Length: 153
Ligand SMILES: [Zn+2]
Ligand SMILES: [Zn+2]
Image 1 (cartoon, rainbow, N blue to C red):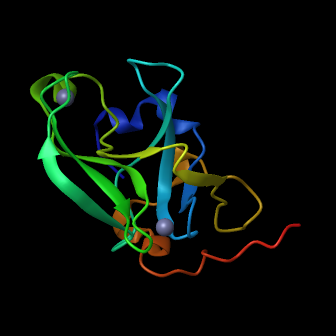
Image 2 (cartoon, protein in one colour; image 1 turned 30 degrees about the horizontal axis):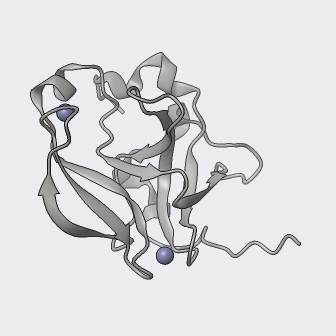
């Protein structure tokens, strides 16, 4: 891991990694989630990721720009049930690229997903961003061995 971007900034290191599931159908829509607060509105909680699991999301509608900046974004929905999940920044604008971003261009609305802290390989400790495997070695994103169903009633 020799990346030298803001992603490895100390404030990200100690954050837990979240798994996110579609609120509606339990489809696993994220295994590398980070909790984020929308700068424009601190009451809005979001999750972001560098890469969603393959085929877990589909984009809906056309690309558009918001009034906040010049990024081109598109909404994304659960690929199974179609419920809105969040949005994907397809083309980040200069001001977003030059500000210290965490390299995450996929966002999830916290009211569209159910979040769960991801555990490390031992299954006993909550995985934090300092310890997450690089995307290319993160086997969890390639198979579904961690997508167990929880029965806790
Ligand atoms: Zn932007
Ligand atoms: Zn779904």
